[in-house]
Image (tube, rainbow, N blue to C red; front, top):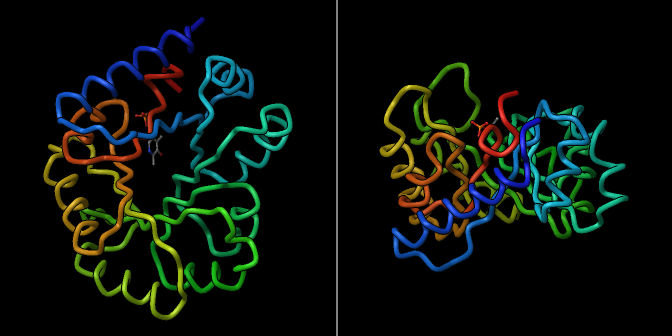
Length: 218
Ligand SMILES: *Cc1c(COP(=O)(O)O)cnc(C)c1O
C-alpha cells in the first residue's frame, strides 16, 4: 500500500527546500488534494498531521468530510474545482476556502448567502491559458472583475488560483497570476500541483494543491 505518511513528509521537505531556494520565509500552505481517495486515505493523512484538504466536487466532499470533521475538528477543507451556482449554499456549508470564483452570477449567489461568509476565504480562478474546457476568468477580464466584486458585492477576495495548461511550461502562467495579484494587493496565490509545485513556489505560490505526490495515482 502507498505510504501516505512518508509521501507527506517528503512533499513537506520539498516545499521547504523550494521556499528556501527562493529566499521565501512566509508559510506556504500545503493542500492535500483528496479527490478520488477514500476516507481511509484522508484519515491516514490526518493521523500524519495534515489538516488541510482539497476536493474538486461538492458532492464528493459532502459524502466524505462531515464524518471526518466530527472526528478531527482541526480539519480545513478547500474547494478547488468549479462551482455550479445552484450548489453555492452547500459549498459554503462544507468548505472553508473557495478557490474557483470565476463569474458574476456566482458572486451574486455568494452574496445571497452572506450569512455564511464568516471565517471563509475566497479566491478567483483565472484561466491563464484561455483554454475553452477550463473554467476561470480570462486574464484581461480580471482587473474589472476584481474591482466589481469589491465595489458591488463587498466580496473579500484573498487571492487568485490558476491551473496552467497541461504539457506547457507553467512559468509564464505563474508569472501572469502573480502579476495580477500584485496589481490588486491580493496576498494569496494558489498555484502548483504535484508536477510543478517547486516552480510555483519560486513564482510566489502561497498555497500548493498536491494530490498524486501524497496519495499516489488516482
Ligand atoms: C486534482 C487537482 C490537483 C492535484 O493534482 P495532482 O497532479 O494530483 O497533484 C490540483 N488542483 C486542482 C484544481 C485539481 O483538480
